[in-house]
Length: 247
Length: 262
Ligand SMILES: Nc1ncnc2c1ncn2[C@@H]1O[C@H](COP(=O)(O)OP(=O)(O)OP(=O)(O)O)[C@@H](O)[C@H]1O
Ligand SMILES: [Mg+2]
Image (cartoon, rainbow over all chains, first blue to last red; front, side, top):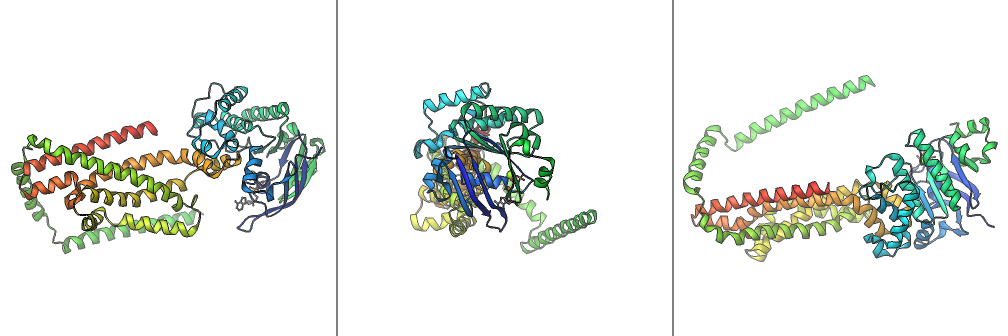
């Protein structure tokens, strides 16, 4: 079986001249739970955003399901994005609308331009969104405004929005960096168990090495825009960690 | 670091004094230039007092019937100008805001255009338009639309520039198209400011429409001006009371609406 995601010689230089990635290669198979670690500014967020084309890579290829996303047309990119859920450090929920609508936004990629723009979601989508919220323990919060929720609850809504896309892959960019340790653990547990139950492949950027070791099936260490480590969690020695986090 | 801060604070203090001195100098200079004096002010004041209490009062309430039409005109003009102005400004604002403008060129042009619209006073627009359209409510309405576009385009553009791009990115990441992103990520952030500014503009329009009416833009302003010419001061005072009532009513209504949405 071919890999779900293959990244080849990926490079990114921003318009201001900052080089964030300088030749990244790796493959991700279905069902993997990959954690990417690396110091601040190493290029982890850039890497994740190149996968769903929120950032346009300067060079190299990103093959998702054997389609090169860097060469895809804008309508193809939208089709690819709806297969890829994304979770953010600052949650990025639409603050002024209800929790339910936030989850429904995950359906936009499947809707026609008019119903999507006006936010006319189908009964089926609404029922499905409620089911997802129930699964994340948010059934009391369905009709609350998103910004009334606690950080941990907001991140669960973020996960729910990603799930409503029925994605093959979830990208999570430091999903627990703005949460306290207990809440962080609950969020990681949710993310991990859901991905395993639903067979969703997951790539998570994290700062905490211990959390990475606890959940990852595989760890990738990024140092100054290149892959400095790629292997099983138990292969990650103190020495390698030092190397990854050195300046 | 400490020294630098102190230095900055000293500079700031100095600047504040300079500004205060400049304002004082300017005030003295302009009062000399305009021949302003307190005794003049007092004399004029007593004249106004006499005028108000003996010529204007009591208002002639039997004329309410005559003034209902102009009063409604004032409200219509202000409201239509606000609605039309708001929608045209919303479209223009998308071209004027850094976050949503398709090109730098268009952005500069739209900004310049709205700045001209905004910086020529409504009254001047009205006087110019009277030449083109003659007297009547059309003039008042167009003049108000023009300044509404000027003010609102900039206000809306500023709202658009302050929206949280993280929310926009999240919606883009779901596979949403450009118009879906506008509808589901930009609009929810834009709406409160949009409604707030539009209502504020409605209040300004009601006030301005009185003045515009006096140069021929229709509504209560026109009635007031006509009344003054015909020495029907007691009808004029009624009209003024109606203006005040309309302004107060609008303020009350808009503040209620604002409370509901924010
Ligand atoms: N939009 C941008 N324009 C210019 N430079 C950028 C942009 N985004 C990121 N960079 C730069 O690219 C480099 C990599 O940034 P990136 O955000 O990918 O790092 P990161 O590993 O996610 O860091 P952190 O752990 O702090 O989130 C940094 O030097 C950063 O300053
Ligand atoms: Mg980052």
